[in-house]
Amino acid sequence: MVPEVATVDRRRLERLRRVGYLLDNSIPIPGTRFRLGIDQLIGLVPGIGDLIGGLLSLYIIVESARIGVPRGLLARMGWNVAIDTLVGEVPILGDLFDIGFKANIRNLALLDGYFRRPVEVRRSSRRFVALIVLGLLLLTAAAIAFAVVLVRLLSGLLQ
Image (cartoon, rainbow, N blue to C red; front, side):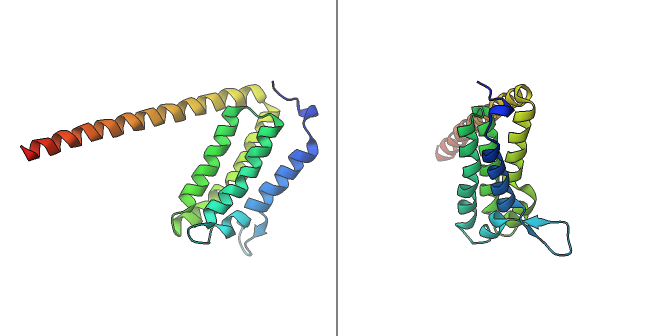
């Protein structure tokens, strides 16, 4: 069932916006138009920083699920957090990526879009999930094909 915008708790949405702003945009960099958030600062801690930032980002996804956002949209939101967390683990380049990617702001834009155009966002989210599943299936098939070729090459060398 699609929640109507009027029935959604406005305070909950406003709290999610504040959390996203705090995590991604709350700290201006003097002399530039760039902003950082707590997520980017925590991400500077080697090894565990981006993981902690990813866990904090899950709050927006969990609250979105409680609101009643469709699973396809939750998958897109989870994808954003996963990309932000995994790429953020790369030293230096990951930190630069974190400054530009801002998964929480992206997720809030997805959430706002859902409440403005629920049918369109639901449809595009289904397509996104289908593409991810297709991509994973192709990746699995490629890995299996690579393993078969490798085994044949190795067995040819041993004979």
